[in-house]
Length: 305
Length: 289
Image (cartoon, rainbow over all chains, first blue to last red; front, top):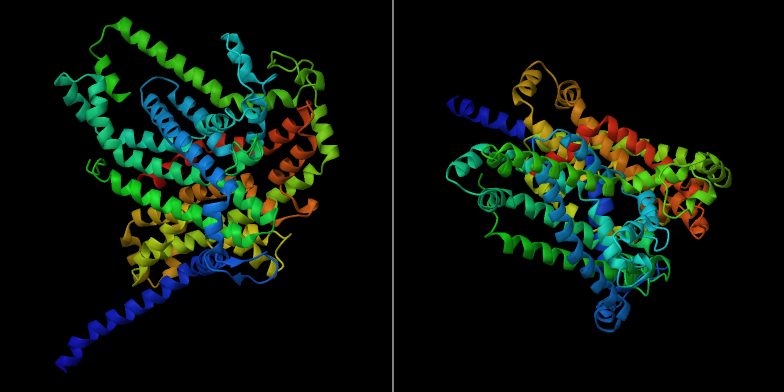
């Protein structure tokens, strides 16, 4: 009798737990199916494809590391795409994060109209797509474009942006700057969370604005900077559409990035296996850099507010 | 700005006025740069072919003409592309709302074993570049005879392949008082009853946020349509634009191209103006936690 009574709440708990488990899996079933069928399944297939000779029509035949060896040792075009992608990441991540931080800093003020400026700065991020990329081609036009017109007012003869291999990548980086809206909003929210008392106390202690920025704002914002930096990096490593529309990888492959390489080898040359291998190189590099950045930043990022 | 504002309190008025003027000057200049592409589209859409190549560029079209729209829409089936885009976008929005709310509810409210494991996995899928799964997916779609249909663009939405939306909804559900669930459960409400009767009617704002992001992403997406559709009649507006660029890109008469660009941006612009604060809310929620 006593034993039965002691057991029953535990049994009830067990029944509730089991019912919860069942309900949970019913709820996440759509995602679970998608995860298996559209994410992890294709990923394993892609890994097998990367280790195979595969034309996308007939079944892949296993060739071991051949694709990777060829990619990383002999393939000059892949090396070029790798270098170009790194060039883009190194140029675009710091500039866009800094601009986002600057804009957030400017917006976090009591001036009238800050809201309107925020709306303007974020819109390019919302509308980024083919139409916007196409317009930039014309803004960058060397003879009729607005940029070179504005430069000519200042007495500078502007470059042939998209037609000059030295300026094509910087041009894409400049366009990318206008897509920093999301980071800007995240920075702005981060800035608003910093208690104003910190600044009041610092002002009473006689700290200058620059000093306050260095000793209060920067440390308290460091997790946000890390987050935005990593998100920007993940995004810019996968750059594809901008290069496809603005330059198609040119001139003389100066903007030929990994995304274009992967795309061309699959859909232009029908070398699916080789293309998969390139996509895994991209993935692994991205993983290594992300982990490295997170680890290296550990000491400098302050999570206490 | 916070820091310098605190300091300005002690500065003389003149200095503050200079500070303020400088602020407006910098912001106005940056605004022009950010708005330039859109002003350019707007202005060029209504120009004659001759005006498109006037140098220096003129902002106000004189005379004002609608001929670009006529040319573009008679030469290209843009009405059809717009309708196709509307179809794909609305299906994606419905699919995302339906699937992501269910999945997010599971992650936020049901205390099951293995929940954290699956959620970590869900978050880590955000790191996977799309290119890794692209070719297997393409091959699978070929085998399923899904190429040239909207299924590859829409089915993933119904299977909650949108970690961002799940995350957003989960955050909201977790912040909602648990006592309401418990009270409803005592009154005999089932687990799914709690979701559809208690949580969702109170989640209109966050559902709207998820919907607008799904809408904009689907509307702007060109990669999926470019790869999975190869029949002209099936194209969405974004791919139609690429096609139009490759056939008209070489001419200096930009009017038709810009008029189509205007049509493709306009819905997003209107939605953005109306729902600006919801866009901000979506970004801020996912960025901070």
